[in-house]
Length: 97
Image (cartoon, rainbow, N blue to C red):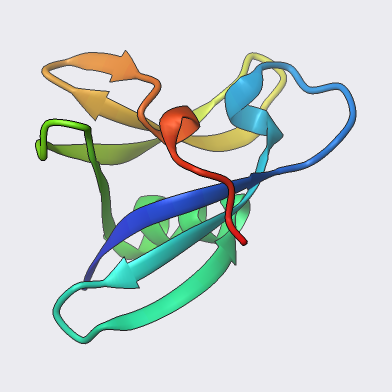
């Protein structure tokens, strides 16, 4: 199964960086049209441990893979990765309603 991340929600307070401020991600499975909203840790675990594939589409319609990462302090988060470079496509998504 693959999902397209469509929106993000951010938690208030101080965070190590903008990506760890993401608390939830809205998504859609374009094959089944199923939609959902999962925590950052649920998406991290699904990608890292269950071979899930998540992606976003940039403004030009390009598909950008979502990967997993950890801060130096061990905080788990997700971030987009394109052409061997970490990018900020998730942060450019709208806030979930």
